[in-house]
Figure (cartoon, rainbow, N blue to C red):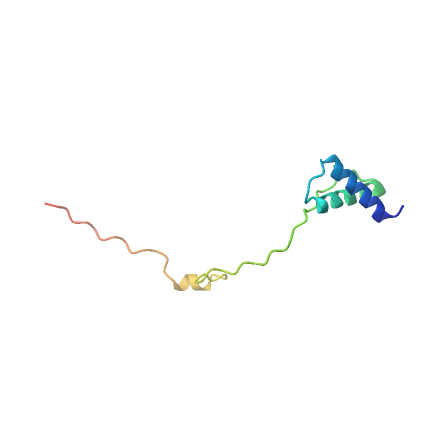
Length: 91
């Protein structure tokens, strides 16, 4: 049996063992890969460093209008308010 078939069968068994949840294909496949790799290398996956989760790329957000990312404009714009004028006492 080739490696792809082993991965497919392992991921399927993981999916079944977790109650057949939807949307977990990537996690099950990655877990199957880690388990097979650990069997091949003899490294216990519980002792191995955790694998990073599958993440989708999100485009970087642009700074809001008036905000300069490098901080150059922060020096030019005053940030402190003027102190309030003292109140007059009523007589």
